[in-house]
Structures are given as structure tokens and as C-alpha cells.
Length: 454
Image 1 (tube, rainbow, N blue to C red):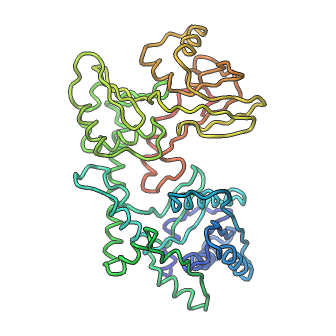
Image 2 (image 1 turned 120 degrees about the horizontal axis):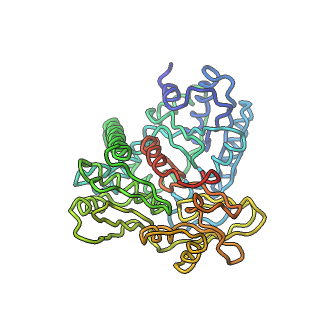
């Protein structure tokens, strides 16, 4: 197999896929990707349909013309092609990240529409080196904590988008000039995006600096960082699944690390706490490993009488002689109206779907509402259990409390709201470096709800 095709076998699942979406901008990388994908599928997966998709961000006057040029190119190759446009206002700041998120959202939308479980993008070894350099510039890694500098792993060959569509990068080990040679062999021209040379943006500045550096050595450094990230994650998986001191999942979205848990946890404790805090707090990113290290040291110290609390990353961490409790803070909890058939994510923790005909509101209960609900259903609770329930979602209809889903194992559900656990740090964009630890966290978070909730 030619070198430029080897990455396809490494990152694409071996089972037959009904369709594959290839993201094609019209630049050299994506055009070469399209040709190489067609060649690979014809040889190894002939039953798999190839669909090209161009995302027009509408940020440059030339973008529509370039998208039309890609459509014509695909037509000549008899490859189905679709243009997806980023509609609406563009943010004044954070444009690059917003554009990337919009691009992935549109690609997922296109993949679902054509029944494709996979998207291919033309990220190259040059892109990997630039990503590594950008993240190295931002990183301040001096303590050597497990999990610190995890971003230096750069891009993974596989990434799961929106918990459903696999994004594959088969060209991460191929240099851009190698791909351009593929195009030159067939006399194929490509578009050059002028923003790629605009020093206003971070990546073009890094790209210019990288020209004077040892890029193969930097690529090797990124691969070494990726292996370190996976090794750190394996340590966390061990901690999450240890049988001597298991972590208990409590109704109301709390986690209990039983007394003695801090024994023999090793250097991965801060990273494990980071994952748990991000999950319970509904946060997209993990907290600082330095903050997690300070928290781990505090947890290891013997508790005096009573309970002691710290807050971090939208969570309350409470330690006592009985163990360590992690729960969501009672701050900044959203109030969300869902009309019939609407779907949304609440507090970064739950995906909700209103499958009925009535409008429903999802919000946290106050203390009076919780007391009345518990009293009405003759449910006894401790103060810790009440604290957790006060930060859990509840369902309201016409201003009246209908149900508290966290108690649905005790009280039959009374609404048409369907709920699924959402993990904000994994479920939108999950790096392949984190597949194993994400699975362990999700097993831990299996909700103790009745069969309606999953």
C-alpha cells in the first residue's frame, strides 16, 4: 500500500460503512484527501458510498465561488457533492473556534442526512506540528502532574463528534508537499485561502515560525505527548474501576468516594478528580491540574470532626470521616422551556426531549418545593441527599412541579420528558486519546433511574 494510503487503514474501522463524508474546501489537502479516499474505497471498501461536503463559512467574498468550483470538480469525477453554509451572525471574538464548531456541526448534519457514520478531514503532519506548537505556547507545564499538558497530544486520528459520528484524519502522518505532489501528478489545481497567510491569526504566525524548525522532531514530540496522555488516562481508568474502594453514584447527580479511597491512588488522582469535577459540574473543559492537585492533597489530609467543604469547577467537594462527596453547586442552574418535540442540553449534564404535547419547563427546585415533594410522596432524606436534589433537574408544567427525575426509581414518572445523561467534556467532541477513559466515566455515571431514563 502506498505511504499516502496507510493512514486510512489505521484510522478507519474495518467494518463496511454504508457511506463516508469527505470534507472538501478546495485547498490542496482536502482535494488530495478526496482523490485518495476514492482510491482507497474502490480498492478496499467498494460498497461504501463517497459523499463530498464543502462548508462555506461565508467569511470571504471568494468562498461561494470556491465552493462552486469544488462542486464542478466533484461533478467531473461523478462524486456526489453538497454545500453547507454557516448561517447567522458571526461572533466578534473567538471566530476561529466558532467557525470550527460550526463546521463540525454542519458536517455531522450532512453525515446523518446521508446515513454516513464517518467524516474524513484532510489534516496533515504540518497541521499536527502547528497544533502542537500552538498548544505548547499556551501551556505552562512545570510540575509534571499526570494529565498536565494533555493538549500537547494535539489531534487524534479519530474523534467522536456529538456522541455519534466518527471524524477520521487519515493524513496526519503525511506532509503537505507529499499531497501536493499527488495533485501535480494529475495536473490538478487547488485554491489557496489568503487567510492562511494572515499574521492576524495565530495559526499563520505559527506556520511561519515552523518553517525554520525541525518539523519531524516536533511531530515525534506530539506523538510522544499523545502516548503520555493515553497512559495517564489508563491510570485514571484503573482508579475509576478499582474494586477495593468503589465510587458510588448517588441519586441527585452526586458521587461518593467511600472512606479510605485516597489510599494508594498514586499520581493520577488530580487528573481523575478533574474528570469527575467536569462531569458533575457540567463543564466542557477539565479544571486546572494544579487546582486538582491542591484538592487531592486536601482530600488526603485526615478530616477533623464534622464536614469540610471546598468548591471547584461548579462543584462542591465535601469530606468527612465517612468519605468524599462530589456534587453540583446550587449556582447558575438554568431554567429551560421546552415546547413539544424540542430537544436541548440542560446544564451540560442532561439531554432532554419533550415527547408530549404540553410545554414543559426544566429547572432546579427550591427548598420549599423539594420539601413538599418529599413530604407528598413520603420520602425520607438526609441533608446531603437534599443538597444533591436541589441541584438536579426537575420538571414543571404550568408552574407546578410535576416530577424530580432523580427520584423516578421511587416515584413513577408523571411527564413526557425523556432524559439521557450528557457529559459535556466528552459528548460534543471526544478525542480518540480519551476514548477509554470516557467509557469508564460513562459506566460510572449510569443513572439510577427507571427504564424510561437511559
